[in-house]
Length: 341
Image 1 (cartoon, rainbow, N blue to C red):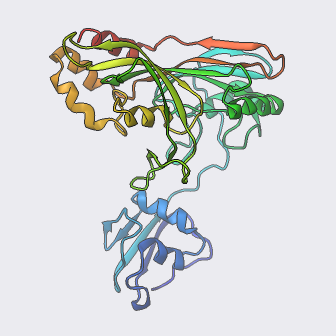
Image 2: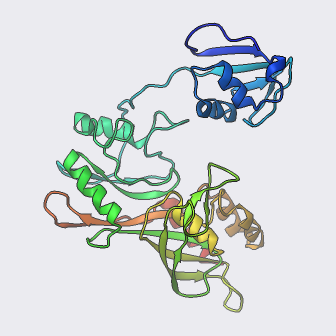
Image 3: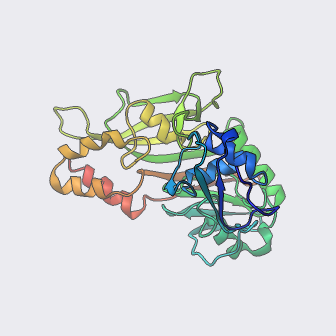
């Protein structure tokens, strides 16, 4: 295989030809062997992003086996900024003082920069709003962030403005409210309804082995992280003489894992309405809805989840701070529609 020229790859296209000695190797391993300046994990990401082609054909599987004589093309993106830049993005500020800021995050806003979202995030907005007071708190790319919400989950977030506040708030979230006033409650609109009025899901979570972008329930005591969600049925929707078509739940987090409520609700057979990752197989339920209601449900663009209650001890005064956020307009419309089932 011909090695690419240059000591440090820059943005642009690199082409290499597979030699006999490399035949049968995995694509990512072959690239790592000959583009040593990039780690294998970074090369795997570039492959999955569609930045590698073999003989002009885009390959998105890092495990693809290369053949002698094939030409591999690797397109390197422009380097991303090492630090997020301030951006003038409107924020719904619920409370702010010298120690912290509470935001009511809209659906669609990413919390912190990451692959594919290096700008336009809540962190970019906070850096503009708070100025230098956030610099370095909690890490360069996540300044002030104590906890997070998924991009398409709306609701309340607290952000630290000082190192002391960050440490104190982080300790409360790590304690999960066992010894303090921390509370996090979400409204979830789900398909079907649990068989009881209230209950708890205690099921470990880990990255899915089938899809690393998703989370899955795994056996207790294995490689997963302990996760506990308490739920209560608030309303059930559907004909009185038939099983509920959908329901409204109040979900309280005892732990805060990635996608926790979404995965736990799917695990007990009541995935969130609109959740394309964990509830897509329930879309057949909407086909049995009246046409006007089905149109609203099918058009709902996100998981029906809202962080409506957040309480914690103020990191400086110790006072219990409690905030509530009403359902946003899109969830209100969805709720009003399914109430008519």
